[in-house]
Image (cartoon, rainbow, N blue to C red; front, side, top):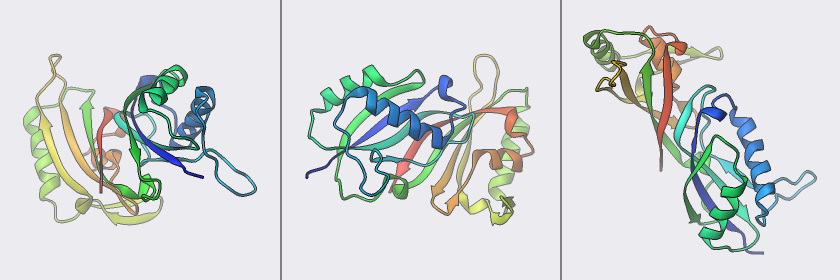
Length: 212
């Protein structure tokens, strides 16, 4: 049987901010069932809808670009798929591009190389001090951190840190380009912590996922 694989790009907005990576899988399962699309199922004793998610998004973050691969048992026009999904997605998911992918291509999560984020600081911060903090982090030879009792070096996982223009309300923000590969993932909250900020001191949004 021919399997039709589609990659869906979508935004994860405020209503789903506190929905975990695992729960997002359930959200997509329910969405696909409601859509009426001919979903392909895995084999074995406990078959389930064939869905590949991209890299996880920390709880409390929003995103302009998330990705999920779905597998169908029949070939449908992209516009028909979009129309069916649009009727079924819950508040918090905004559909973007939908494209056909080679069914034999590697799993989506193994293709993710890096992600970009924008962190907007919620409290007033001196722009010069924030810029100096970003530069200091980039100049550090190493940034020893511990995650789940495992020591690692955060510094090689940071590709860039860029101060952005202040908002009309005066809030400061900066962009992080971080590694997101399996076994080598930099977490935005760890970058904030290394700068001396609480993870709750900023509103963070993923802006892009970059694939191999």
